[in-house]
Length: 119
Ligand code: HEC
Image 1 (cartoon, rainbow, N blue to C red):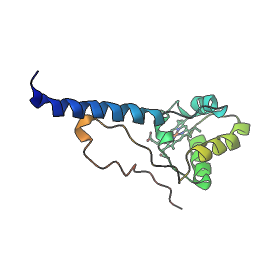
Image 2: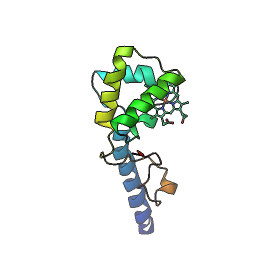
Image 3: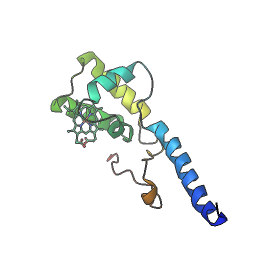
Image 4: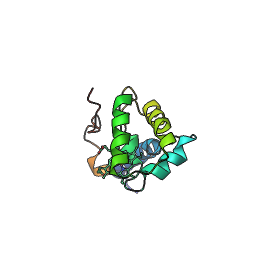
């Protein structure tokens, strides 16, 4: 192996580490509401669309009620507990979600996640 390939190998290794680290924020946090959220919320899309949100409680209420209107099936007694679960785990002051990226697009800024709280 020639030494001129070393920088490329180091770069690819770092990319692999970054991808492994960001994989930790792709799933719903453990707890009693996790299985209920998975059951109620992942029949139409995966949980990634949820964990990337940073919303106030008011916006989580709106979001859950919108999903119920769109067809999410959940026990009415779980509605409030799911709202608590999401607003405690994904509030506006939590550091932004880090999207996993392909190696080719990694040079771009990862500051914006697109969806933001509006109030
Ligand atoms: C009946 C199908 C369905 C179910 C069940 C469902 N959703 Fe959705 N959800 C959608 C659709 C359709 C979209 C918008 C299109 C897309 O991006 O996939 C969406 C988008 C979202 C978004 C992105 C923001 C937005 O409003 O577009 C969030 C957050 C979300 N859903 C959360 C949830 C949560 C939490 C649950 C469980 C309570 C849930 N969803 C259950 C259909 C569903």
